[in-house]
Image (cartoon, rainbow, N blue to C red; front, side, top):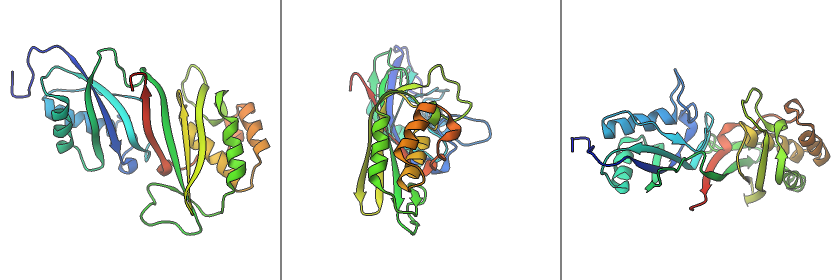
Length: 258
């Protein structure tokens, strides 16, 4: 075995669950000229193992979007136990990226293609004045929102729908249909709102575009009937503005073995 822990052991598939504050990053995916979470994680793994390590994620999160349960996997030949990888990597990562769990999984596991569903939350601070502490973690909406018509809109997107109206323009996808298992609105506090979305997959900006349009309904600028027409019309230009990235969190990725 060399000083980096490598030997003749068979290739192993390691799954990590990550939590991160996306405020200081240009999203998950590596890109030239901008710091990404993927770049930081892969660089620190490279330091840990003494060679390049490529990481596959369950999906990309955009600039400013946070995660409480992002799942990634990578292949490595080393005898380090998962708990040793967890401790070692956390000692190398910056404070705004944390490994919550590490485990060895079957060779066939793929963080993206093995996923059955993903769950996102979107958080809104609904009061006249903003928050100095939460400015990077919620969308501040000054105007009071009416939850009843917003909940009516959420009911319309349950099940299999074509979500073209809520997809960022220019997104390269084979299908714009997704199966929405859960779409709920809660009020955790007197001035806070929490949307929860669970689906078998999400189009780029889909949650933020749905949220932005539903909030316009909550403000009285649109009606639930307008929302239904937008969904059926499949035209992004007819939907509302994209909600800010700060309020969005990837909460969990669900697999058949979980």
